[in-house]
Image (tube, rainbow over all chains, first blue to last red; front, side, top):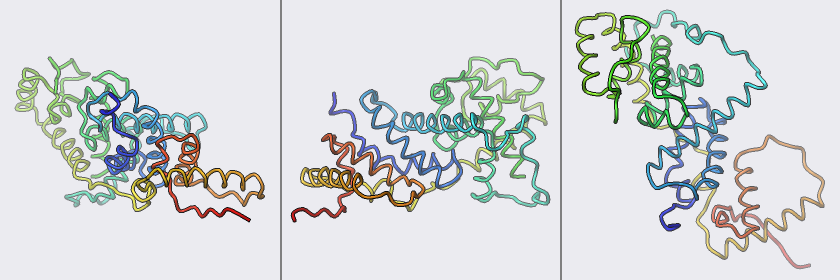
Length: 163
Length: 143
């Protein structure tokens, strides 16, 4: 049985790049992404014994997302910056950008970073990682309908921000 | 993947978040047909579909973001039993020195250091994690 379970080192080597990319899209900056990957790898190490052979990326995504959300909750308990009450108001359209036809990666990343975490997480798991709604619901412990709603609202906010 | 057996009633007459489920192929065939029928007759939903499709695509084409910091490959060189033993020794010596020497001014903890210290702890216990420990720690013994 243990022969089927990859070592922590093997996971870090084979999926480090994947983990870092997801972490970066979730956190929006390199320093936090770096921290996130390290913490996720420690949890991977602890959790490898319980890993059920299956989608490694889905499993890793769940771990890195949970680390991210734990950190978000921790910061919320000691808020540095108040969150807006209505996320729909967060992203006013950029003035004079209506001639833009294609968004630059930096702009997309900036818009992604400004999404409320719940929306951002759902969007990243769907559009960066490629998980199904069911897998995302499982990872976030929320109903599939909630996943669908968060993804859709997240995309609408992004669209508004990129216009 | 498994989709929705039906379109749940939304807050209004429009498809709303069913549009994203439609784009993501998360609708069951019957619900998909219903959505397509609605789209054919609703310019508002077609416009919203275009918008969310644009946002969806913008994220999906983002390049993989890599780091140049050696968190995964260079920081964790391949190990041998000999390297493992050396690292365990180095960690023990470093711990002893840390007890004796005054601490230097604290700098922001970096992740490599977290990883290293973790590896060092693990290596003392003979854990396989020692494979990941850097070995470039100078150790001198003797008088």
